[in-house]
Every structure is written in C-alpha cells, then in structure tokens.
Amino acid sequence: MNRTLNIFCRLAVVAALASMMSGCGIYGKFKAPEYEETADAYGDIAAGDSTSMGDILWRDFFDDKNLQALIDTALANNSDMVTAKLRIDEANASLKAARLAYVPGLDVSPNAAYGYDIDAKGGSWSFQLPVNASWQVDIFGKLTNAKRRQLAAYMQSNEYARAVQAQLVATVAIQYYSLLALDAQYEIYKETEKNWRENVRVTEQLLEAGRYTADAVYQAQSNYYSVCNNLLDIRQQLHQTENQMCSLLGKVSGTPIERGSIEDWTSPEMIDVGIPVEVLSNRPDVKQAEYQFAQAFYTTNGARSAMYPSITITGSLDFYSMIVNAVGSLVEPIFQQGQLRANLKIAKAQQAEAEVAFRQSIIDAGIEVNNTMIALRTAQDKTANYAAQVSSLEKAVKAAQSKMQDKNSTYLEVLTAQQSLLTAQVAQISNRLSEISEVITLYQALGGGCE
Image (cartoon, rainbow, N blue to C red; front, side, top):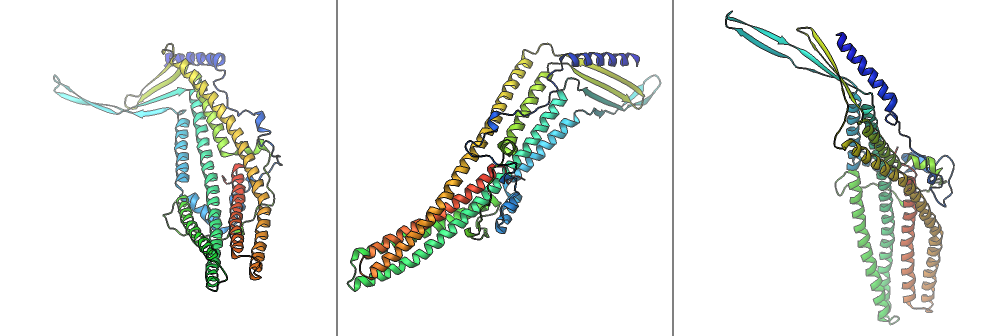
C-alpha cells in the first residue's frame, strides 16, 4: 500500500511541474474578438439607439390573429423546426457525455470456478467479485477542452434552432401577405372582368347601330379575354401559394388558410435598426459562426494537450477476498509519425478559417440590413407615386368616357385608359407587398422572430 501511495505522490509532483511549465495555452477560454467593421456595419444607414425593431417579440410585431395562428402551427409542425430541436437533443447528449468523462469508470466482472481434487476425492467452489475503477486525471486539459468544445457545439445547435425559427416566422409572414396581395389583385381582375364584359356588350350594340367600327369591338374583346386569362393566372398562383404555406405548416395540400385583408397591415411607426455591435452580435447566424469559432479554438487546445502525458489511475476491490490494489500510470507520447504535430497544424488552420467565417458573417449581416433598408425606402417612396398614378388614371378613364359620350373621342381611348388603370392598380398592390416584405425581412435581419 505504501509503495502505491509513493507512486501517486510522484505522479502528482510530475504532473504539477509539467502543468506549471507547459500548460500555457491549454486551458485558455475562448473570447470572441471585436472588429472595426462592426461599428459601421450598416454602411450609409444611420445607426439608432440601444433598441431595435428586432427586440420586439414576433407575437407583438405581427398583430394579425390569423397570422399568429399560422406561425404557431408552423413552429409546432414544420419539419425543419422539428429537426433543429432534435439537433439540440443530440448536442445535449454529447455534452452530458463529455461532462461525465470526469467521473471514474466502474465495472464489475464476477466469476466463479470449481476445483476438483482427485486425491481428496472432492472439490470446492471459488468466487470473485472484483469492482474495477479507472479515472483519467485531467492535468493537461484534455477533458476540459473536450467538454468546452461540446458546450460550444450545444450552444451552436441552439443558435441554429433560433435561426430556423426566425427564418420560419419571416417566411410564413411573407407567404401570408403574398396570399393577401393575390387576393386583392384577384378582386381587381374580377371587377375588371365584369366591367370589360359589359364593354364588349356595349361596343357590339354600337357596332350594330352603326356608331362604331369593327376594330373597336375586336379591341374590347381582346382586352376582355386578356383579363380572363389574368384571372386564371392569379387563381393558379393562389393555389400554389396556399400549397407552399401548407408545406411550411406541415399540413397536406388543400388545407384552408384562414386570412384577412392586406389593408389590415399597419407598418411600424418607428423603424429603428439599433447599434450594429449590439444587434448583429445577437443574430442567430452570427452567433452560430461565433460558436463554430469557439469549437475550433478548443479543438486547437485539445490538439496541444494531446502532446502531453495522459495520467490514469486504476484500482480494483474484490469483495470476497477483500483485496485492494491501485495503480497509477503516466503515458507520454514520444513518436507517432508526426501525427500529433500535424493534428495541431490542421486545428490551427481550421481555427483561422472559423475566424474568417465569423468575421464575414458580421460583414454579411450588416450588408443585409443595408440592402433591406434601401429596398424598404424605395418601396415606401413608390407608394405615394402609385397612389397619385392610380388617382390620375381614374380621372383619365372618366374623362375618356365623358368625351366618348360627347362623341369627341373613340372607344379605343376609353379602353386604353382602362388598361393603363388596371396595370397601375395591380402594380400598386405588388409594391404594397414589397413594402411589407421588406419590413418583415428587416425585422429578421435585426434578429427578430427568434425568441
């Protein structure tokens, strides 16, 4: 027993000295660096105060009850969301295993033997019930770095789930308002089809009365059939968009999509993008890149620690014979065909790659905010123009109809004005959808929807 204790003491002294002399860089903790690009990541878009639109909970940001119900369904049933949650479970199991590596391993190997003595003409049984224990002493950080790497992997899986949720919330919302825009355009085309059918009837009567030529009738008929085709196209787009929504919801094709009107949308009174360094650092995709960087950092630490000795203490206790023994072992890698140094070089290179990816994720996030803000401002500026255009064309249609009644113009002028009005009305709805979509995209770009 004294000899065993002496071995333990010597091992402890050797390990302590080795740790003090060569443990530098093995136990270091990861800290994400700060880059100059973060401060002005939005480019020419002015930063706001400490709060941003992305801080708003999605349920508060989208006040449409139908949309809220659809998002709830998607978060519960969407296959990507379910997969992301399963990845968290996988990473959590790996993390627990890494933490349990600190605990000694125990196993029991019972055995029994029967011996027969020919001279004594008899035999006897012998039994053994040894309990074996093995414990790796984490002097050089092999277990610590493995645990920290798994913790970073677990955190990355959480951020992946947050990113999937944010994308899902935004996609469902944009698909929802796409349906509302198609509904609005369908109503415009349906009303136009009704009016232009009447146009055909009127022109045919006027042709019979000798007031119009055949070309006016043919033009009226052409416009009418064009609108009929537009109605069919919109109906097809509605079915396709509804099916896309069903896929997001994890529902079968043809599931009814309850919805309201695009006129119910109200843009946020204040669109604040916040401070880049605070907003972008909390985006799920940026956090994923950060935790990937952390994993690479701890992989490098682990590659360094692999060059140092492994200290293992093993022991056993036999409950039948009450024999106890313990052994301490120290294994120092000497020559492994350069594999350990190669592993370290590979780990360092992968760590550098992860840092580049992390840095690029910040740049890309800032560019996304900048692009979205520009697109949003463009759509907002167009809104007033489209409103004025539609108003002017409505007056143009009335003026053309009035001139026609006074026989100062042909019916072709009326048809042309009506066609221009229809085009402007449909474009106005499309621009409305663009504005809504850019607001939603900006909300996601600022980290919204991932709570």
